[in-house]
Length: 550
Ligand SMILES: *[C@@H]1O[C@H](CO)[C@@H](O)[C@H](O)[C@H]1NC(C)=O
Ligand SMILES: *[C@@H]1O[C@H](CO)[C@@H](O)[C@H](O)[C@H]1NC(C)=O
Ligand SMILES: *[C@@H]1O[C@H](CO)[C@@H](O)[C@H](O)[C@H]1NC(C)=O
Ligand SMILES: *[C@@H]1O[C@H](CO)[C@@H](O)[C@H](O)[C@H]1NC(C)=O
Ligand SMILES: *[C@@H]1O[C@H](CO)[C@@H](O)[C@H](O)[C@H]1NC(C)=O
Image 1 (cartoon, rainbow, N blue to C red):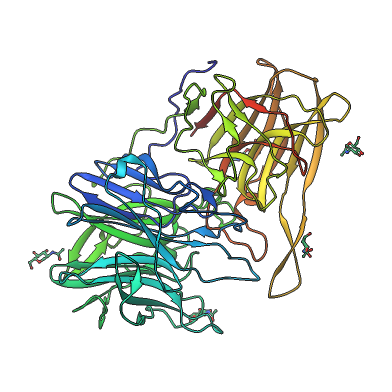
Image 2 (cartoon, helix red, strand yellow):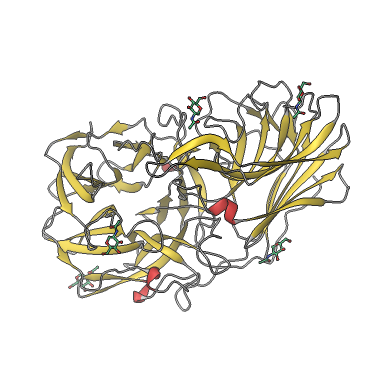
């Protein structure tokens, strides 16, 4: 409408291959097509499925869990929800299997260990997967392995001691059709690290390569200690021989590297016989771990073999480039959506499973219209909020909002969003007497009282400020992100000059409240809320422009 898509000078890095938060990648190849699934936590739909022909350029083709019958994230706390998947293809039945876990309860007070499940599809491009088939075990990070004799193994991470919360890799044989256990669950591995609660062996994948079984796991927690290690043995259950080169992926040995927290790997063989792997990593900015607002992204690396052991990335730490192996990609292109399509782009997400439809692309052609409900972004519900991941550290988000705000509770705007507990925004709110004001909500953070066990109060530390604007007409809203901060601004009309009343430190999007978690990353969003009361004022957004920059 007002802008043409721009080609900007953003870095053409190779890695991350899936920029913006995409943790826990699982990869599979079918013919010459590669597919990756990643984690989505309390976002809906769950588990993006990406497709590539060359491992470098990826396209989002759908989601494994896009119906409420598959995933009902109602009241699911931040960073619970959908955890690490395993994506596999069963050649005999020509079906894709997506294994996963929905953690409905994961707060400091109460961590219910969930049961895992799988969904299947015969046509991965159709964006329609089956309803869940549940397993019997408690645990997370489920893997599936078909042995040559037809036995099907389920392998996962769980606790073996409810008091000490010592984690282990568990396994049993299952009846695949029903998910029902056929054998007792047994601990098949406890990891390579000293056996305590921060060792946490997880993310298991079993492979059968060259007549040998391999068990690849993640361990060391999800921070700088995170790593990948591998074992091999004569059966899918071991006994295991430790790779003397473990850990085979561990950037945490050098905390000055630009990529950190590496691990949770999965490997795949290309058609030409070469091997490749994917893993998660973060790119801390400003030389510290408080500025990693994009979260855990997906990285690619080559895999070679030595003495029957896989060597990840030539034995080197993961990096943003694979010099001499793969060339960097083209620079990132701006995302510009003028809402002329009648369907929502696949890259948009809701917070939790919406109870009912709250958006329309047809009510006012050329606009994304949001219908508010009583819930606001800090509520553990599903507000009228549409999110799209931030994809580079230096990135600007802009929209134009048409919104009349009849009461001092009716509010619509934009947000830089991590969760109900961490988000900062700028919007338009009524003044209650016919006028409108710009409202900024910053430093939104949950408070915490007392020592362990941690209890969150319902209150938030929020700074609210108001700025006067005209009573009607469009308002443009903009968030400019860089390595260490976000600037939140507005401009009246279609040509007014931007004012940036707020600059926040981006650590407000990457440092969780005490007792909280940081498993996701930042997303830009548009919202409409009645702040506790239902509202009948729609909010119309004329475009969505996300511009990555150098
Ligand atoms: C677990 O063991 C490692 C290595 O001995 C140690 O560094 C770490 O502090 C321990 N963690 C806990 C929670 O005991
Ligand atoms: C499999 O074994 C063959 C013969 O020993 C060897 O050449 C090849 O590198 C092995 N492949 C892997 C993935 O270990
Ligand atoms: C909103 O309007 C109500 C009713 O007019 C008034 O009682 C309340 O103080 C106002 N709140 C704010 C924050 O302006
Ligand atoms: C949070 O709010 C709920 C419902 O209003 C209340 O029952 C609970 O006690 C509150 N919790 C805290 C820690 O204040
Ligand atoms: C980010 O933007 C803020 C606000 O304009 C500025 O003060 C800061 O220097 C910038 N930081 C970097 C690393 O570019």
